[in-house]
Image 1 (cartoon, rainbow, N blue to C red):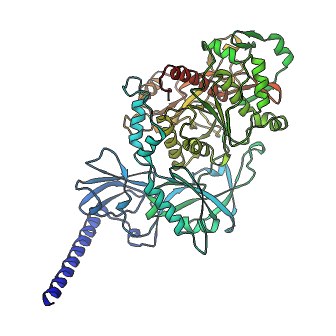
Image 2 (cartoon, rainbow, N blue to C red; image 1 turned 90 degrees about the horizontal axis):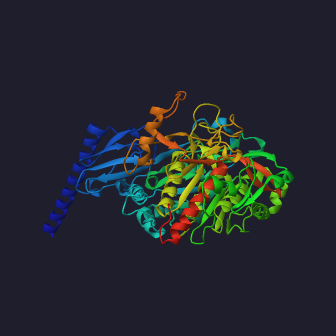
Image 3 (cartoon, rainbow, N blue to C red; image 1 turned 45 degrees about the vertical axis):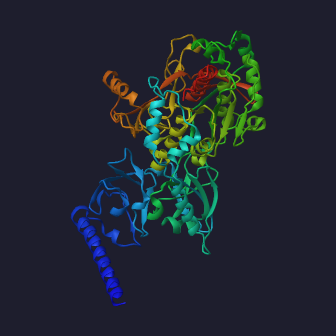
Length: 622
């Protein structure tokens, strides 16, 4: 027993020496090379990391460019090769010499609890919202946890490859299951669900009300007081300053910033309905005067592809101008439009439109989110039916027979609700048209990244995303200066501008409000967020646009006024007629203009190409 006792004492001593050496090594490296902030030493302190840029040491391995989080890792969790850690958004990404990409590695955390600041409210919100009283602690509030996706750089590389017509992999789109295998983060979802369960107790309950199939978006509800405790923040009412026609019925409940404990922060891209203050998205359509149907009927001509009316756009005129041989698609493909802000479409208006235009009657195949009503359009008229009716009538008018889906989403999340809806589908519509937008400067980084991630996933599955480029030139309805639009500035949407002229027998030119009755000025510009100078697989910019952007600024004359980005994603990608579209609203004809008209028309054209490719045994365009 003496020898056993002696051996036991020696083991304890060795263990103490090992721990002391390990602690000394970390302390020494930390002191000499990283100079970590005092907050790291306090397990219960909040750490404001908004301006941090630290070099962290992991044992003897140096981890460079770690910002926005007080992370101290241990050598044992790494491979034998030195590692590099960086932050994309608020997620620590670890790269060793053995890997070709950064991957989140939450095992690098010590087992201490510390709140990490995640995101703050976008500056300048006072131009759009007025901060009100503190929200009552007893009021229920719903938030959405966006789980950090894995290996998105790998998926972007795949997308670049399968979208390149010169690649042998062109058109080899992935299935939902294949995408999920690459990007899903089940461990991150498990941690967040466990975190929410741990915060359900007698003093406050957290109810998980909804999850996407892969659990990458988790919707949860709790009282304001409980969220304030969890996020270490305060919630207030924020009242929209929009005009009465676009005023929100209820104020938003939001906070100026929020944080999360370190044990879940690495796996969360962002939490929505906390600091995001999106304005009501703006439809990109301008409503013109009502049209005298008697005059139109006398001047209209029914040709082989339908009705043509002088000075107005019809599906038949579009076929003539853009040399569309046939408007008949097929049931092998699908298409859809997205609406928000209380927009409706009228099935009876669609029928009247088809009859006048000489088109075979076709109904909207699928309606998601409601907002299909003849009565609503008769009562509310153009204010709440112009966008919905225009999109449906002209998408179907251009690509007939093709099954069409009408998506309606609440305005509080702009596009995210819609993207989550289609992201959950095994086989989403192959073409999706969006005629809405926000200034990109109003949107938080986590929200932008989430929308882009879902757009990348859909594109990899062979879906083409079309967006109207806006009706305010290089300014997205802000006071002055350059204000790029979102999602037009995203590389994963095809942005469509507007032209004018052919409907009146003139040459086709860009729509300008002060030229030949252009009504709107076609939206376009250079994104401030997405640079066009990188060929990296992680770049959000199409590599093929670099020379076009450079060439534009070297040849444009006269030079634009100062203040614009010179090396960003340029848009629109294409343009077509966007002026004087005959649209039926509440049984009457009205003239509508804008890139809202151009976008669903181009989407219909893509559907026709998809139909021909599918009939020939080929893939969709994507």
